[in-house]
Length: 360
Image (cartoon, rainbow, N blue to C red; front, side):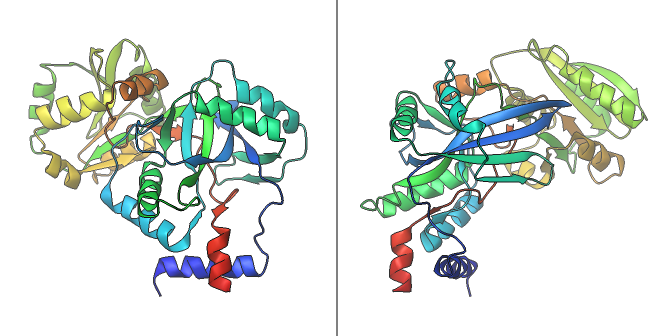
């Protein structure tokens, strides 16, 4: 049996046995994540709702990264076969007035509908907002401003394609989304580091070519874990004024610095370092380049010889992302890691009519 068919039959079983039941009232679901960010406790407050699917930039929905064909095809087949959204598309918007945060205050002191901790120990809680006037105010808030896809580009693009194939279906016209204010103070963006499993040039040649465009200095050689942590801190210094990268080659941690331009760090790394200096083509990079959210994992991969080189990056800043999308430019893949991630399954969007017909 095809995996998508298995999901559909399992969901039909849960609905039939009332393991999953629809809520009695239409609602917007307040969603709060309490998490740790570099030793500080933070709260990311947003909400789950159905968002109308739109062609990009026709009204306000904007992607910020290019997508890959295989994950998109998987999401497309899943949605067509199952007609349910389990995981939300992660959307962000701008609102310095913090309108939603003020509206949500009315439920935050009540017991949540559901609460769970993820594998990292972060606390996820949801409440229902059912007051019609409050729901209208939240809808009006988003109707007046653009939203940016922070995470879930493949989910959104696949959902948009299902709507194109089913233009007369109200269910296919909408998708489950999580909306968060990028000016609310709760979002964190973490870097995604790079590993190179091969080099076309010798290490000496790489360093020689780098020194023509970058200031290259040694942070440490054969250092300890503490040295590595201190090295990362050095990479972060003055990152708003300079492009700064950490480069791991064998047991040496180098610092690469050049004056900041309008380009993103990830764009400078891809175009100037990996392609121009290290002489890789796009096709070759698909074979030798890997990504890691864990800087220690990059150091370990280079240290044990599985990778030839590793790059430690600074996070892309929120202002840079908005600036890029407003100029109709997209970031390279794996440019951002929005944290904390949204839990799948807290709220689901299921085509009830489809399952009534299936069971009937």
